[in-house]
Amino acid sequence: MGFTEVIKAALDRLSFSIGLASCFASGLAALSPWINAKLDQKQLVFAWIVFVFSSVWVVAEIGRWVSDRLKSHKRSITAVRESLYMDIYQLQKKQGGLRGSRWVLEQPFEVASEIADKYARLNELGIKTPEINPAAKEWDFDLHNHFLTAMMPFLAKSPLKEVKAQARNILRGLLT
Image 1: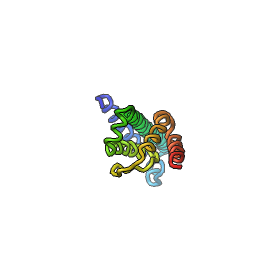
Image 2: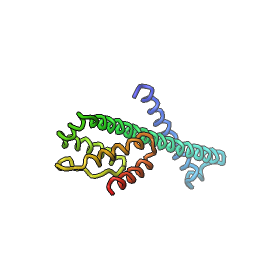
Image 3: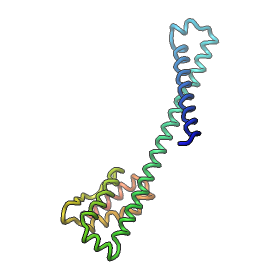
Image 4: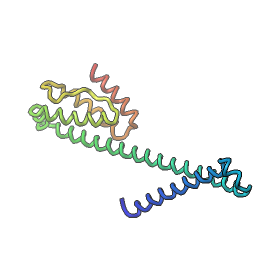
């Protein structure tokens, strides 16, 4: 975070605090019967105007903050999905060819651990995956390899809701 971003964040917080304080003070003046009785008509109209505009401004500012948070969250999910896509691609590449076949046969625990890592990251996104036990001697490599391969086209570009639906369809097809 650079100097300008720090200054901008500080000014945003300061202006929000001032807006909230003016909303509270004008609301108190406009709505409180004790203070309201002591004000003349012009002051009361002014208090109402300040109250309405500061209330709208505070609500708009809160909406902007929420919108920024949601956009930031969406960008982070997209980055996680793209990173996961590349990791699955690298795993598929590592498993390919004669060397990859030997790796799968000679290092089943390592292969299962890598697949389990990808599954854990998919589960964090809410995507259902097949069960895998890296400690088990016999586990179905082909099932897990097919699942990850089938998920790849949907993982990077499709909406998350569609990815979850495709994962369910792929699982149904592989497990039946």
